[in-house]
Image (cartoon, rainbow, N blue to C red):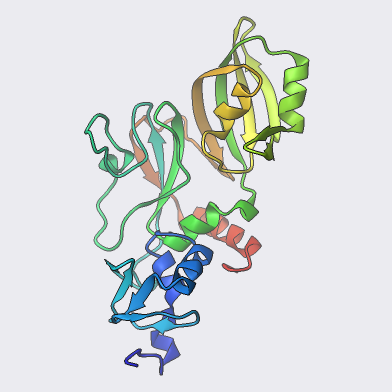
Length: 259
């Protein structure tokens, strides 16, 4: 074999190198390797393989550009997503703008979303150039609090609020609000602040839907200890300090594969 593994200081684990591109978590990529979907220098890779910076990696025959952890500084952006923007790199039909259009250009790598917001939602989005950090923060074991302010239409009873606190079944799995409290409104349109600790798709909307309540506005205002600044205009971003990034990195220690 022509794998350059003799000097471990110049090599990294294959699954870590691929994860750093943002394609998936280490656990997911380990499954790809075990299934024979990954090749290094044209040879099907095996679990435990270490790769050098000049090794050629391909997933499902598609070449992967390596991003070595020592090549670039770890960065995290806080972006204020407006309603109407999508959280994908492009819309095939060109109907809407994408959050990536307003971000600074990277010389190495690409911006990777830490969670998403649907097209009709707005508020705090985090993006990073570090794939491992992104995947770790989206891991269910991190149990990160995400706080939203929500305008809800419908007859909100104490029974419905109790259901949302204690849990309802969504796709056969229990889901609930860690916190739900009224913030404004006395009519059929009322504002609530809610907190969830998982990132399931459209979770906040689906929880209210389960009680025949309709979400007409949804704004994410907090992710862990990071809050949306009142002074940040919609469609603009700011860069997190090294101290804030370290706070996020500490959460990775809750996951054995990243600790």
